[in-house]
Structures are given as structure tokens and as C-alpha cells.
Amino acid sequence: MRKAIDTLTREDLFQNYQTFGDPEGSKTLKALHLAVPTWIFEEDFRPILLTWGFIAVIAALLGFCVM
Image (tube, rainbow, N blue to C red; front, top):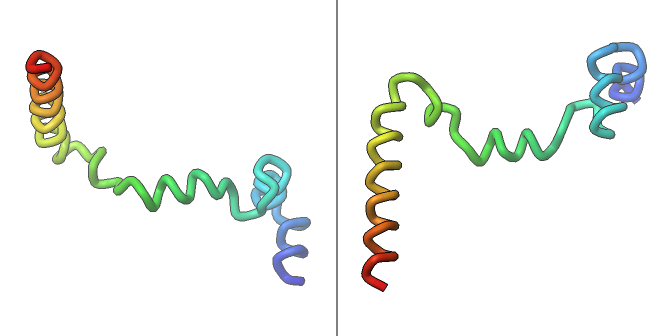
């Protein structure tokens, strides 16, 4: 009962309910937030991410060339 009252009285919860059908917000965005760690996109991790991305591209290209 309290969740319904809060949804009707708080503007942010009501907006989420109108947009996503749930006062807590989008369940898809919550699932993505749990699936993808936020530290991957931090500034300190960017050089490591770019390095491994480059290695993955090279490995994929070599894999296609061998075929």
C-alpha cells in the first residue's frame, strides 16, 4: 500500500510509472547496470580497455585471414 501512495504522491516515481510501467524505473537498465561493471568505463581503465580491444581486433583479423 505504501508503494502505491508513494507512486501517486512523488513526481519522480509517478514519472517512472508512466514511462516504464514501474515506479522503480526500467528493469532493462537495471539489468544492464548489473551485467556491465561501471569500472570498465572509468578513465583509469581506458588504456587497458583500448589495448585489449586492439588485441581482439588483430586476433579476429588473423583468424579471418587463416580461413
